[in-house]
Image 1 (cartoon, rainbow, N blue to C red):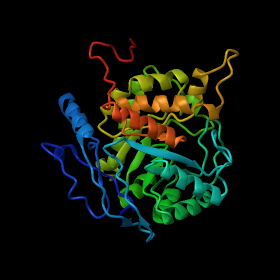
Image 2: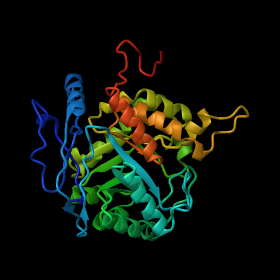
Image 3: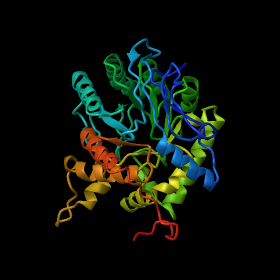
Image 4: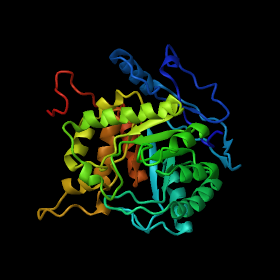
Length: 361
């Protein structure tokens, strides 16, 4: 079974000496990136050069498994990296809980985000904010499936934000294209089987436990080194379960079992996570550590709905450091910022070889 919107990450061996996209397969365009294997330093650098120089063309629309025709989006346009727009159909998400619980409101917002420039709409039916209490699978499925079906009918590419294999399978069958699993497969070991059978991309986020206790698990000696090692373990588990290496994307999990200082270290040292060999998704949108940074003189954090500029700035820093994509609520602001970045020559943030890890100048 193939996802309606298929993302193919070219293996490193096919990246040299030249690339072409004239042979896009019927199920969708290739997406630049490397196989999730451990490369030596020279090959990693070569892979990054290839990653930045790849050009892509659009392929024909492809029917999803549900029979709905989805327009295939080039997920790595020459103009900018991937932008995922957040669509929470929950009553209790930290940023927009309840705002899109109504089907019509949710679909209208998803369409609007896509028109604003989102390459994927990330549909989620269970809040993963710190302290959130889990809902059952039936409730989550009932929330997301009508939205996925309606957006698929409208030609909007989607990812499904879930930790449950049953929800992921149902959403993929309804027209979703990518699985965004904040647990990296730990919450439901059956997820690997679903992803392997579907052949669709799987975003593996760094995760140490469910929302009701994750902040108790935010203990690290070296947050970047430990996150990297734990993500590498998730990659190995996925490969062992039969998931293709070129379907994996990683996410460092900002705010998930992380304190503010951990989030900043992961941001500053983001290039170290690229050594995993997978494309990297950066998701800082409106999170509490940005609110803490922007606190008023009395120490009150900046309200959630006033963190857009900080989100855009942080997302741009991540892209300049090599992130494959960003997950954001404020899509238009992000797309505009990336357009400026592109027009200015796509400057990169590259750590100085003489600086120790995590140092700042």
